[in-house]
Image (cartoon, rainbow, N blue to C red; front, side, top):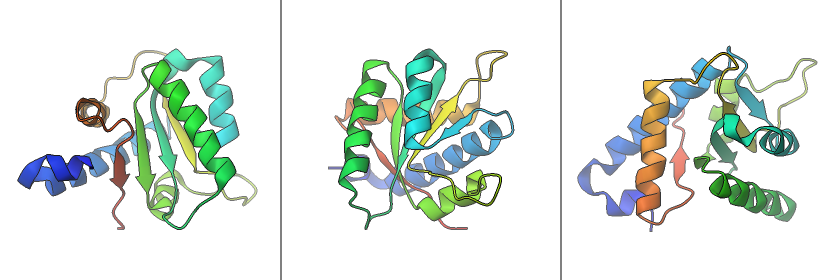
Length: 155
């Protein structure tokens, strides 16, 4: 059962609203240097300073069935749950790549399977869009959906 199944008539509107808020969070965090991408880079960042991580995104496309990736996801999810870090599964990696630029310097594509959003070094980040995403995660956990899925709509 998903959050959409249990929340009634406003579920589609709420999912779209949360997806838009997630896009705002990513767009505002990127220029501040508050984005870490890649499964291995995320694992290093989580081990180094988990208190600085405000959101973890795990992204796949539906047809992707990489067993090693799923093991990494399981370990990252467990770590995030243990450290009270909100987690979202994100579908539509193509849209995620558009939001984040998708290419590293040198033209190499980014590993967007795991994306961490961290606080800026200067202060705690207070963003209404981040609050909306965090509230959605909290509400989902109340419904025993520990890793809710958000579909980023194409633009």
